[in-house]
Length: 190
Image 1 (cartoon, rainbow, N blue to C red):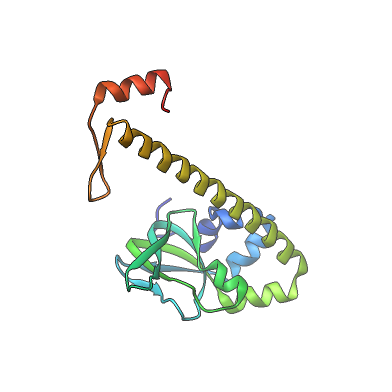
Image 2: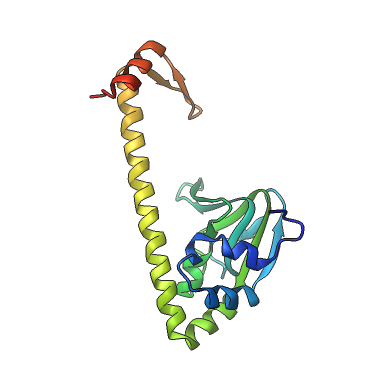
């Protein structure tokens, strides 16, 4: 979709955390939303401040980061098109537990915090639908985390088997092409 003339409704229609909502509620949320644009490295909101709203990414990339105890930034989440951010603080009505920053030029739909909270207070059925949608989103996150754990274990085994080498910059180098091909063909990695 072209991002110059995109509407908030277009973006929210693709936002995973809202995918479980019935069409009337998606329409209602898009009516109170607006399209917001961020340039690369622009801060969307800071940790400890109330987030302006729930954001759905239409294009670009946003990273959600938390300041670690040593001052180092820990990346919690990369929000790609179809992903959302800011939802936890908005649903829970507390300050942002992390900061959000555009990695590249990004176009998002933003449901303002006050508008969403007012709708949630007034409409029990919206609460139930969002709760169900959020539960499915959390289940998908858990499955993703387990997949990443499996990937980490597999990479560690490949390093131990001297098939790949882990480089300091987070990259990997194939150390034994034939060995890797044999593992791929046999499906055997102990």
